[in-house]
Image (cartoon, rainbow, N blue to C red; front, side, top):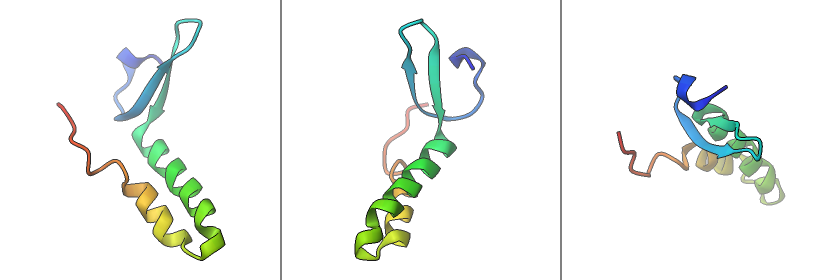
Length: 65
């Protein structure tokens, strides 16, 4: 997928050495971070809280439109 064709909100993009753009959709990014945060918090029995923090970690940021 190319950036100019994207209609989904993006978490971030990265240009590959071949010039193509790799996109990470915001929804997928939030789910990925939530899953990873929950896995890290397993050792101290806080999976749910960590997953919630991962899911919400982007929302306090100011978004320019």
